[in-house]
Image 1 (cartoon, rainbow, N blue to C red):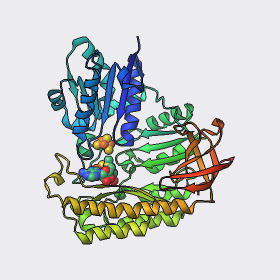
Image 2: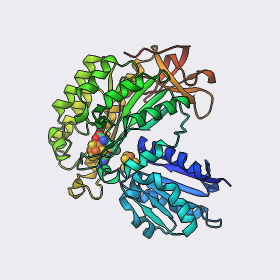
Image 3: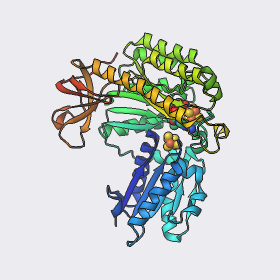
Image 4: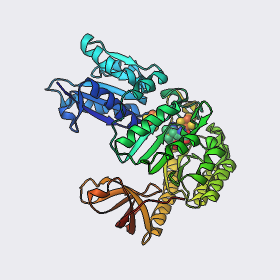
Length: 442
Ligand code: SAM
Ligand code: SF4
Ligand code: F3S
């Protein structure tokens, strides 16, 4: 008989992809998704460890489930993701309500782990780095994503060891999936109705399989008629190689938004962070891309108030933001992560850190509003993804990934539609459809 599973996902797009693939796997042993955790026979929490209180959030969440099920039979509790990897068996000790702890490179074993647990009733923590076997196994299970825009992980892990970051410890060393394995998954997604492929990796542009790189992969995926749009994230500035930059000259399907996290505008801070790139190199990449295609815009990640960041360093970040006019960005105050080099450094004053964050966000958000405002009365290409939550309107994304909301019928879902923008706010464009058409990007 089918068992109900509730899956809650924290963190990055890779965790979203993983949650979907875990579900594709669990369906084989009779699990069916439920949106109500109160009804679940299995509660799976896919966790993120990137910033503070990640661990506490997990225990808090499990505590809530425990309370809900106080007078009912307990669901199977599984913790996966980056907190599972970082904390491993400690989790089973600290919260006996948790049954299984499975790290990101062991998802191919999850069905066996569950069946074993049900048979032997022995709690288990599985946090081996076994990424080759994982993708071999997953490639034999169809990706069931039926979304217009689907994630596809092509690379995992990281060898860069930025001093602030837990990813090299939670996801393990860099690994690139075999080229043909990825193309098979693209075909599979096209058969399911996907129109946009978002290639994922913690360092997606470090992808290399034999002598093939991300540029080769993009150009190969572009050949599939069913694919209308291609994106990739997250890139490291050091891996923005000439071949990848050149792709923007030829590609008709690669979208003109480059997410290129810079973290800080100060070379001194970048060095302290062990980022392996400087601002001159970063700007060279930005301007090369802009020269190739003036439509290209940039988004970024910033860490504010990194240990050692003085007022001048902070001003350098502000100046960089003003120069590049990023159209969308993530900014957070530095959060010391256990086990990283930066965790031992002295953090900056809390009030000053908050002030710097607010300053940066005010500039970033103002720019975002201005860019969106400048699109009012313009006609843009929108890939329609689905209906808005209240079902009254259509939801899609511009070539630059901005949310677009407009009136229209369901038959436009999955199509690229011309939309005239009538209104906007910081995060969303509102408009009216003109007609449905095929896009031209470059
Ligand atoms: N690999 C990407 C890169 O090198 O730019 C970043 C991947 S990381 C999962 C996503 C973002 O989380 C980073 O770009 C950084 O801004 C942020 N981040 C990572 N560790 C952090 C920390 N300790 N405190 C605050 N933000 C952090
Ligand atoms: Fe983390 Fe990205 Fe640095 Fe790797 S390159 S350590 S994922 S911030
Ligand atoms: Fe978080 Fe792990 Fe992604 S720490 S950001 S879920 S790689």
